[in-house]
Image (cartoon, rainbow over all chains, first blue to last red; front, side):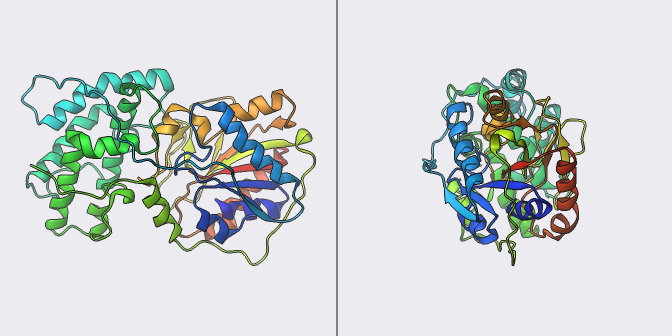
Length: 231
Length: 156
């Protein structure tokens, strides 16, 4: 990001770069950089809070008055308090399918509600569509139960498939929550509370034990959840 | 089956991991003095891999950019890394791409105008030479040709 600030400024454009990782912002040292100690994915800080976003923009644009390069820090930080989303997961359907598959089917109305209310800006669209999610979860459940990961039929690079599954769950979570979730609140819910999360973590362990190359199993979950001892 | 425990997902861990990456460095810092903000046309450039539905998504190590139309609001988050929160963006695109906020600032005269074009690149790049030498200057020219004076850069 800050690399582009240098390039644009060289071309004759004035820039202000927001940065959420202080070491990166200071290391690349853009002409004007505003360090905002916010979670990654939320560079303006708070979703659905226009007043706060305007405060960030005001601080950023004030840097245009500067006459030489500078890095400043926004006056308010947003800490990760470790919230775990508490929401009722809709009843699974009454099939004999794996619990994670039935769970995913049960979440579909919530997924569709979020898209209707907020648009399809995140979710399952990179490799899979929402109709593909239950089948993909079944594959990871099979691997977790001991199936050979190479022969299980993962429909693409495993981490990308999981990203769509996670997206599906997090989109559904937006409609299930009674508040605007904090950063990673729904991710923790997905990994720690849902059957699909358990299946993926189990598959991850199986892939590791079956000798899959480290990047293939390691990045099935966010690096934020990786135990330093296993990396 | 009980899965093995994992470390607790934390924004702090993500940022600590990112802090360890080697940043791109520049020997000299270019510096452009803008005209007054109230007379400036402002664009957003984000590294969140945003794209419209009909545009191709970003592949890992993709150094190209997408042009975003400020009259639309159908910007998909195409970032590949799992190390970002995406729920905030799913609720409010302004938390990454504050286009509504710019419209408000233009309406009250704080900024001169909102640009007709905005750009999205893919962040999380380990090799930035392609952006530095090719797609970055190409994007800069596009913005200059569109009459842009000031660019707000937002990461993912």
